[in-house]
Image 1 (cartoon, helix red, strand yellow):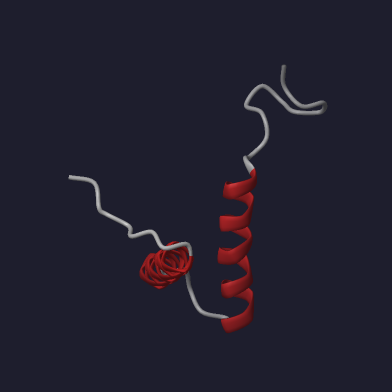
Image 2 (spheres, one colour; image 1 turned 120 degrees about the vertical axis):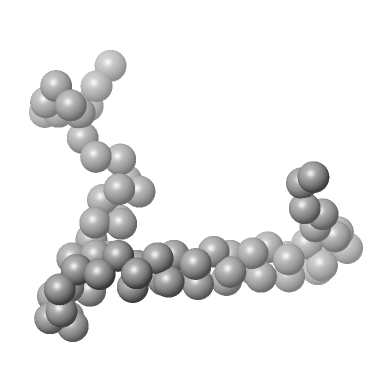
Length: 69
């Protein structure tokens, strides 16, 4: 079942909409042309922060994160 009002392609998922909104916000705020490198750096920073948050949570619960082989 597809959402009401969605066309044959359906609607963009929530993650895609957030990503597009972040790109649009950056372009409008800083008035500079699209540069995928800026967004790649932001994504890498966000992933590092998420990993650090997860490691802190695991340490608080007396767990240790082990990378997959």
